[in-house]
Length: 398
Image (cartoon, rainbow, N blue to C red; front, side, top):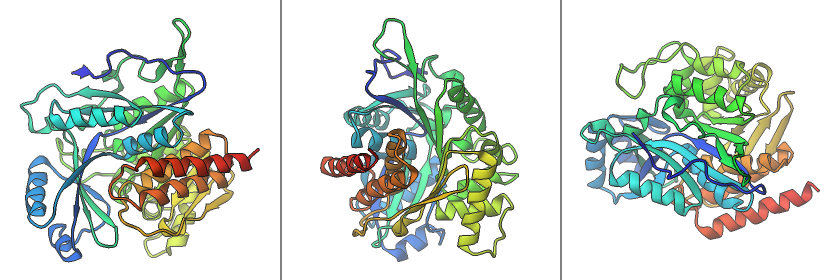
């Protein structure tokens, strides 16, 4: 396999913080559809994100193209976070994204888009183009008229990145401009889908912590939370859902190596029931509170952040104190990428040393911009509005 970057680490000036996103470089294929079509093609399994294999993806794309136009835009949870973070505060953050693509045009397009969006791509290339799983990752995103999304993802070549030993030695470092002197990243952000590869996660997180990095993770989907917390995964060897160590996420939380954890309300509920700290018949509020207590008291993380959609968000710190953010009242066009934009806004505030209530506000500002456009890529004017409003939050802090 080869590495796309010509030379690592690149130079980062002392004025900017160095942030690394780690995950699957997924090309989103977006299709607007009606609810009846979605119920039929998704077999009534609506909402969230479910992995499929290459042949299933081809079948779904063929059926969908018969009723809707398909639009491709680079996505992937951690890449979206990295891209938004790089653009809402371009003078404050240098962002690198780490993942694996296939030797195809999709991978080349993805790499080009990252560089155009002010993100340094560190993309390994899976070498064997003859294998079906060497295609770059794709996600089919059905969007209903209410702006909600249902996704089916074929991770393909991205699953070839299974160990930190495949990465260049200095993947966590960048030159600070001094001769032969390297500086580690301030933050490593992982998407929850990386938990499907436990060896990779159990290597990169301790490696990052050993270099003094903060580590954040987004739980990604309620299906993922259920499978990585439960004792068994229902996938077969060779499939995307592979056999996982017992209670992987539980173990990671208790390791105290996770500094920030992001989830939506549904994922927080699934987390509490899968961990056995809440019952299936408990109310949503009871489940969320149970998840907050478990994560903050057992994990000691700096923030457990739960996004609540139109109701904003709530963050709990290691003392169990709660902080709230209100969502902007805007017209929802498409929720794809909104959670990732929220995470990027919160992280921007956190890395700027804003108090948690203003971090919540920063997240809601970015998420509010994202739901007003189709896909996960914000226009320049949206980034400028987010930057201006976060800068106003900074001034409140002085």
